[in-house]
Length: 393
View 1 (tube, one colour):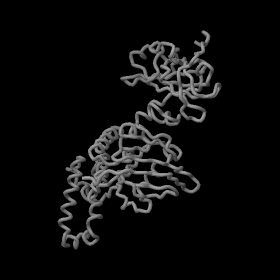
View 2 (cartoon, helix red, strand yellow):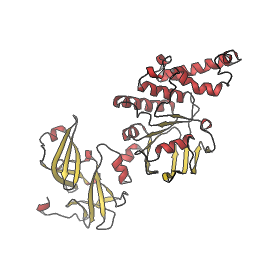
View 3 (cartoon, helix red, strand yellow):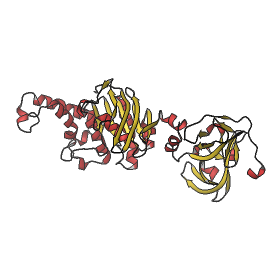
């Protein structure tokens, strides 16, 4: 029922509000039928970029193309995109059916045909209204709204209102769906259910979705690719798994993942990395003596007896807090000036008590390294691992 898929290309997009730079030369290409999510902290520019794509704001510099055609001079209604807003933007005095039908009525009926009295007797009006009703019922049925068409928004739950907003966008048969924080007003359980519905809807329609959120879980679970934005720039564009496993910048690594990735100060030594007074058997491609930040995901840290061999990288400290989460326990360890969190199986963590001395370990291959500017640097096995005295063990 949709008009087809579309590529979207944004080139060198810049935008300022007064003296504040919001977008700083953003380049982005969105593929046909792709679900792409713009994710990042508040104020990073993601919503402004979406509004420029929709035509609700205009870039100071740069170009927007949809299916290869420049649309910068086109009004929003001529761009063949549909936007779902955070607030749903439903008319409270209209029924669900009327809200969903409104875009079709505005496009297919003349001003006179839309009048309550005169419009009904004008030639062709009845036939067009029957077509609109049929399309509204088809779209509503596909979203489970068939029994709610006679209700008004105040009589609906948050999740139902969200589906009405989606139906109103769908019925227009746009080339591109734009969604701005559409789940932010829902409670936690409903967010999980609705993001599943949106992902399934995308697979069913096969059209291009551009989705904005500050919630990394939404970005990771729904998207084909994720564009992680900070300070008006895209720091990394990749699949969710690549963003998680292979972050190209420290800020990307720290933003994605719950609990947050562990970061530890280190320095490059001749035989590897010096991390909190311990020699780790990995080398980073930086000059000797240079400061380095090493990062390890909590699920890649274990109690040290579970990771053995010459490639193990260890951290020693005391248990500061235990979070029992049922299927796993988060063990918080104070290691000198740093705090480290490890995901541990409950049976392995059951013997731990607060203030116990512990050692955590990770295989060298799980360690990420970043230079002083936060850029990812390659690592490899150290050629001559340093050996520390027993005082450091």
